[in-house]
Every structure is written in structure tokens, then in C-alpha cells.
Length: 291
Ligand SMILES: NC(=O)c1ccc[n+]([C@@H]2O[C@H](COP(=O)([O-])OP(=O)(O)OC[C@H]3O[C@@H](n4cnc5c(N)ncnc54)[C@H](O)[C@@H]3O)[C@@H](O)[C@H]2O)c1
Image 1 (cartoon, rainbow, N blue to C red):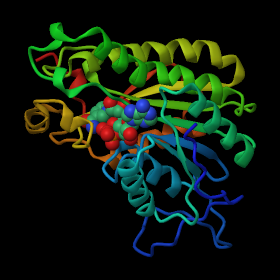
Image 2: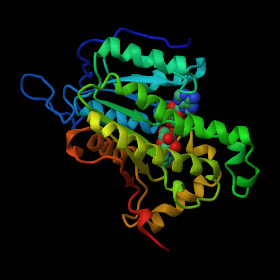
Image 3: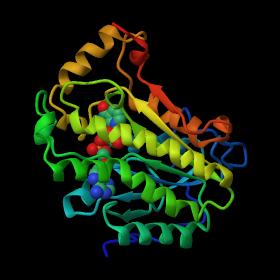
């Protein structure tokens, strides 16, 4: 059992005021009036301050959400996660050690969230892993069975495992968002088994959306364009992808974490109340191109 409740979570999570932070919206009494005011969520997948999950957390916090952060346990990992979360400038951040391949970690993380929060309103799944040895052009056919199974387990099945448990603490409905990539649909050299895992993730999100809809829970995937992170560095060819994308993308630029964060806020907030089972691209338009 490796779940580790680092700190008790306060009933209300206050963001330390940053006077240069222009996007923060508070009314005159100091009460948050953002799109996610009063909403509570779990943000899985912060590894460091470059993690997409960290950017999403920042945007959600800016809109008044209260977040807890399940992270992959490990001494080195925990140090980096703590640094990243410190950068979010929240009072009393709550970190939960949770390896999504371990049923007991998942059980403990969700029941700890239930104890502290009562109920939650959203979950962000920003988790993926594949052995980088096989994330090279020309190596897909070499993918061993265990490497394939591990990539699918961590990157796709974990969404099902998290959603099933999260449902129990979302009695009033809510929103689940998972991160995907275009390699699920088209061949991106070097993306290999991760492309297969992302296809499974997107399909899982649709099946979950169909089943959890009657409980008022929406499930969507957000397909981000390339961003330089720990995970993307494992894909050989990421430098070329990042160089070529802005030359071709309709918006003539790469996306950044804020682009993803803002769309995640849309997906976890009531702004997307009628949207479920969708895969939403945030890629400066790259996916629309045929040539
Ligand atoms: N960076 C990109 O270009 C890009 C583009 C589209 C989609 N994505 C997706 O965004 C998500 C986040 O990736 P990122 O780019 O921020 O990289 P990242 O390395 O910062 O995040 C990946 C996270 O997965 C976690 N993880 C791996 N195995 C785990 C396990 N067994 N249990 C719990 N957590 C585990 C890692 O600890 C890490 O926090 C992934 O799903 C990735 O595929 C990334």
C-alpha cells in the first residue's frame, strides 16, 4: 500500500495571491467567482512543472477549483511533483501517491478523496507510459507482448479503473477528461505502441461516456498537439515534430500548456454541459490537414 496522504486538505483551498496573475477572478468579498468556483477535482499526472497536468491544474485553480494531485510514487518523482505543485502557489496542497497499475493504490486514493472532499466534480487523467526503446521509427513490429500490455494498462485501462471508482464519489454527476494525441488515428513515426494505447483510451472514453451518462457523468478526451514534456521526450522524432508543426498548422504555431488548460476548463465546467464521448483537438488545427 503506497497511498500517502501528505497533508490534510482544508475545506476551502486558497490560492496564494499573485499580484501579477491577471486571469484570477475574484469578487469584492474575495470569494472566487470563476467558472469552477466550488468545484473539487482530482488531477492525475503531474510529474514536473512541464507536465500537461500541471498546466491544466493551474487553469482549473485560476477558475476557483479545489484540486488534489495523485502522483506516481517514488522518491525522485515525489520531489519533482512537490516542486511543481509548490509552483501552483496553493495553500496546503494535497498530494496522493498512486500507481495506477495497483488496484489497492486506486482504491485508497479514491476513498481518501471521498473522505476529504465528500464528493468530487471532475477528474483529469493525464497519464501515459511506454518503454521508450520501442518509441522509435521502424520499431513498432518489434514491440514485445509485455511492453504492449504495460503501455495499454497504464495509458488506457487506467482511465476505466479510475472512472469506475470516481463514479462512487460523483453522485451529482461530473466530468472526466483524459489526454490523447493524434497518433491514435494516424501513423506518427516513432509514436508506435502509444498510438495504439491512445486509440484504446479514446474508445474507452466513448464506452465510459455511454455508460456513465445516466449518472450525469461526462467523459471526453482532449487531443493535444505536441508539447515538450518528460513523456514526449521519450518519443524519438519529437524535435522534428515540434519543428514541423508550426510550419504546417493553420494557426502557424505550436500549442502551449495554457491552450490545453483553457480547453480542459471548458470540458470540466458547465460550459460543456451537453458534450460527452467526444475527442476535442487542441492542436492549432493540425489534424484537419490532408497534406
Ligand atoms: N506532451 C505532448 O506532446 C502530448 C501530446 C498529446 C497528449 N499527451 C498526453 O498528455 C498526458 C500527460 O503527458 P505529459 O506530456 O504531460 O508528460 P508527463 O511525463 O509530464 O506526464 C505523464 C504522467 O504519467 C504519469 N504516470 C506514468 N505511469 C504512471 C503510473 N503507473 N501511475 C501513475 N502515474 C503514472 C507520470 O508520473 C507523469 O506524471 C499523457 O497522456 C500524454 O500521452 C502529451
